[in-house]
Image (tube, rainbow, N blue to C red; front, side, top):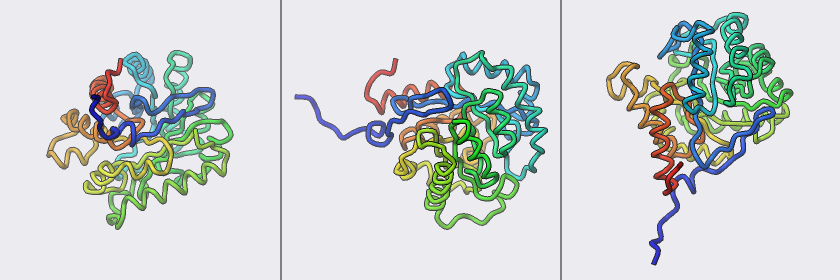
Length: 297
């Protein structure tokens, strides 16, 4: 007689979705998808300056695509704690050559990591499919109109304050409720600008104005966010809460990142945003195989 057992976290905790992004689509749910980070900046917390040269950034994008990335996330402004904003023109000078350099050369979805409507609009004109929006439309609500008009997908990422002020804020009294309410408002605002539900992704914003304890609570109770009925993206890669727990610098956080990524998947994440793609793909293959109780080939 076949042994009976309760449903897995993958089966019960992660609903399947079809993400629409302009003229493209991506199935979410059966396996965890990856968003690979390309920072075209001099000052990002983990790899600032490494891909500031557009040619190096293009090569990195194509390398990540060949390794199996599902989404390439290109950003031209650091959002590390305490950083000052840069002009939109400077951000565009960094990202547009990269977007133009990879256009038509990869089947990956392309995401622009920005909170500025001017940058989002120009990036979408240059071929991007997704706006990865730090601040969930709080920092520049016009991003919603641009995404709605172009049919782009949007990632609504929660932040407390701004990148400059977020770590100086007093701790949240109830971080889970704050995230849920903020992202619900952002999703409603997105809908009012013509962004269909199948073009919206939610991100709780690990590390953005949150204490170590907040980050652990969000990851441990990620399934609460799943009740909002949108796909979930989580970015823990190399972040400072991992370093604070273990007392290690950013370059030594690979295994810690892998552990946090697997826990995000167990909690229901559909997409994980990562720097170390090959290693995280290995971790995800095992996590998806265990949760799905089958071999993922």
